[in-house]
Length: 414
Image (cartoon, rainbow, N blue to C red; front, side, top):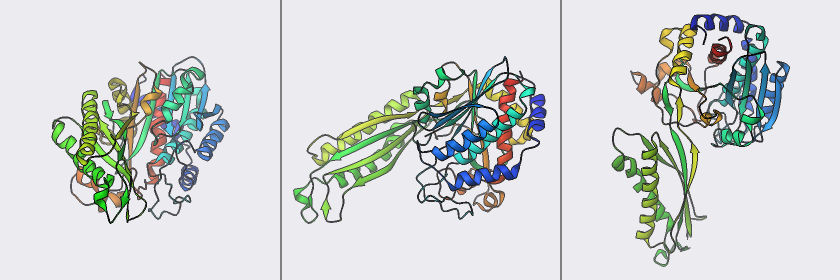
């Protein structure tokens, strides 16, 4: 690890020629053409083209739509930089001149920014390859939103097919007044699980409910009862979130359907809490179905999603120090543990340290207009990730490149 001041100085030198107009054009193009998980063909091709032009050996089609670029300049550590590429099934409502041209699909989580940062950081480091030694691996990951992209890359042999990392870095755009770079040592993001529930009833005519077992009513009781799992079964000092994000039943208002389907998402930060929550969900579903007299037991299927993201504390402290040198002491602070989830950590083989930080992106006028006086109140009042109104300030384009470049140089120049 080089001294933070040295890394910061070298980063400024390497990135002094960044073309902000080119970055903005690339970013806006990606934003206009969002692609869902495992469908990022155009995005991957755009990233691969820039990596090849910069001198990387590029492999496409890793885990279907992933991209890996490798640039070796001699002996030294292997540094991986990761950016995710997929968009969300959200209809954009920002009104931006470069808003999504794909109906019902939007880069509502900022992965278009992530790809732009990744491509530009890779280009800057390649252009300055005479100043560092080691191997840089650039990973364009598919399907983070679907929760399977990183695991799919591992299953496709990314650790065997490419130089094994000595360290892994990633970052995420976040709401908050643009110009800050939060770091959290240790646990920073939660585990995520999805639970699919099928409630089996007895269908029939809407005029004769007495001849049916209404799965809509039963599933509604399940939804209501699930709200008590965290409130009444998890200690106040522990963290958990249970969200019912999907409720599908029926085809017409005068038909009582034969089944109802729920999609439940669970966020936890402790394995014991996770097991208690999942057990409680199963108990609630089975209990409500039994109380309603459902003809067959419900189906409850747990789909494990993302593990917790636990930054290496020493590594995070080192990178945070570099970012303070780059942007100022007050720009870096501990964001705290978040209930959001990521599959980023799966890209790190066992024992390999990683660090994952944030780049805040809310435009100053939007932040100033948000209700509230303190940070938490304003944070809750601005559009965040997954919102149809999420619109990062383009001013974060260049700083987001520098955060990645500096993290890589902190190891490659060591």
